[in-house]
Amino acid sequence: MTTRGPKDGVTTLRELPRAIEPGRDLWPQIESEISGRGATAPAAQATVSTRRGHGTPLRWLAAAAMVGALAVGVWIGRSVLPGAGPAPLAQAARPAGATLPAAWVSDPRYQRQHEELMRSLGAQLAALPPASRVKVMASLTTIRQAKQQLEEALGKDPGNALLQELLVNTYQDEMRVLTDVREASDAGKGI
Image 1: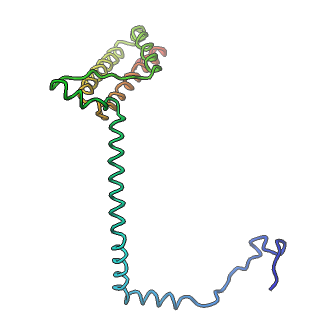
Image 2: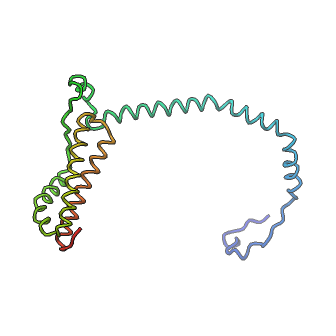
Image 3: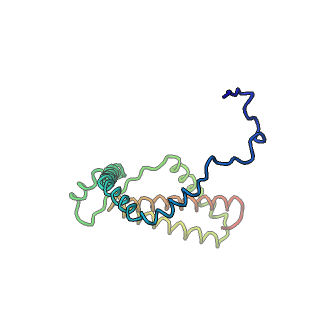
């Protein structure tokens, strides 16, 4: 047998043969395996059930590990949420129905933009048509009431993630309205 060098090897697909016949016919063996499978089906099922039996303790161990990891994650997550630290002690010390003041530290950029938009709100509202002005004032009043209610609810339950998300969404809604008012007054059109 001679060895081929890199120059003697196949360089293009055209040099390969179009068809290669196998050394033996594989179909009789495949057919016997398929037809023999029906006769040995109970044995195959027994093998599968024994395999499952060996994996059962491992599956229970994996499930227990998942539950343990979930419990640790919840425990760590509760200690990281805003207001979740000393809340149980504060709840025990305060009378029933009393609220804690909700303290939210917000982004300084948000504070600056919000203050700037609020300072210019009066002039921008004056530039709007009366119908648009009424809509904007109604929207801002609704948003302010929602913020106040959410902050009060968070004072009672500071670790409530849903209330926190709703409050953030309300802040974003207020910024959208204020930004839309600025854009509409700059363009001289209504909302």
